[in-house]
Length: 165
Image 1 (cartoon, rainbow, N blue to C red):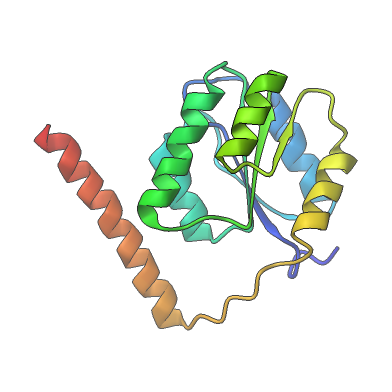
Image 2 (tube, rainbow, N blue to C red):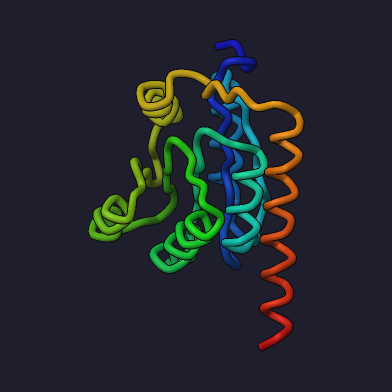
C-alpha cells in the first residue's frame, strides 16, 4: 500500500496507563502493512488526544487502554472530539476490554473493539474495509492555518477555564 494514499491512523494511550507494548506492536504492524501512523505515546489527556487527532486530520483514531478505565477515558475523548466539532472516519478501541464493555463502546460510536491476541492482519483488514484510502480534503493552506488557529484558541480557552476554577 502506498502510504501517500493510505489512511492516516493515530494510536493513543489515554490516562495514566503505563503499559504500551501492545500499542507499540500495533503501531509497528500497521506501519509495516503500509499505513500512515502517528503514535502519541503514553499518558495523554482526552483533550490532548482530541486536539492532536484533529490537527493531524487522521482517518482512524485507535485508543488503547489497559487500565480498566476504558469506559470513562474513551467517553471523555469522544466528548472532547464533540467539543471541537471533529470526528475521524473510524473510531477503534483496543486493550483488555470485557465483552459487555465492548458492546457499550460500540453504542458510544466505536466501530471496532479489539482485545489481546487479535492478529495484526485482522486489524489491518478491518481498517482497509472501512477506510479504503486517505480522505481527500480539498483545503488551501489558508484553511489549514485557520483550523490550526481555531484549535489553538480552543486549547487556550480550556487553559483559561481551568485557572478560573
